[in-house]
Image (tube, rainbow, N blue to C red; front, top):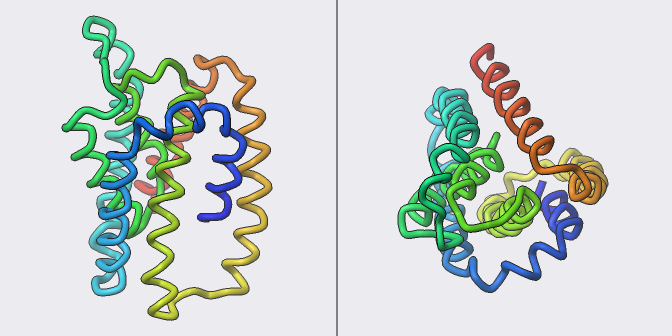
Length: 195
């Protein structure tokens, strides 16, 4: 999926070039958290996190939905405050360990930032996803835990979908993008609850 995120980030290149310097702290905690999560996955059964996934997704979706109401009175001044960095670290551990719905968790955090639009949030989220997924690959490479035929096939489709999805969604109004993210979040929550 890392190559798909790279392609998607390429689709948001204008937003990323604007904000990449101000999110260095978030990139740093993402790198450390993801590495820890990947190492944790290689040494623990995945069932531990699997039971938490639907609750995490539902919580993140609800926070994302309520963020505009919560931030209306107190406009944030930073892209990442200290509490957001702490949450980003936790999400990064989860991303390195499992990662389903990680983007929605990050969008929930970014909803409380000074980023001006959904496009800006998606661009920053994709850049952080590059760091999380990219560093998580390293322990799996070292451990020989990658099924290459499946991984390469997924990479091709992820790259195509990531790039063109990003270019399309840059032209979609923020309120529609927000509604689609909420629908996806609720759908993924329901799917993992059902499983």
